[in-house]
Image 1 (cartoon, rainbow, N blue to C red):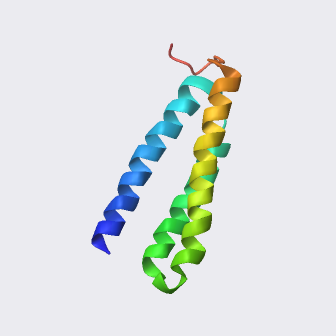
Image 2: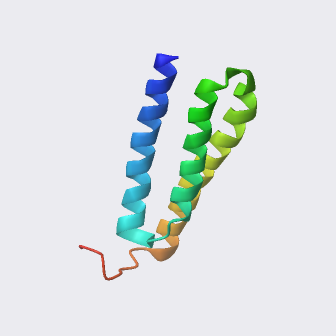
Amino acid sequence: MVFEAVMVLLAFCIGAYSLYHGYRKHHHNKWPFILFSVGIILLIIKLFFVHYDTWLLIPAVILIVTAHFTNYRKCRIHDHAHADDCDH
């Protein structure tokens, strides 16, 4: 269980950094963060409710992948759409 918790924490750190970079540098849309957060919350809940492992894992993975795909698409669509809070 400790290994799985560390992997969830690692996935959160890497995923959050990736989404934050896209948000800050490209699209300024919070929707990928919302999808990602719900997915990570489901993964955390899965750590405690092992009897519902598959029922929590499948939607968690779908939400996290959708968050990254949405982030990717929004980065490509806006292609460096600058806002007042951009530092570049």
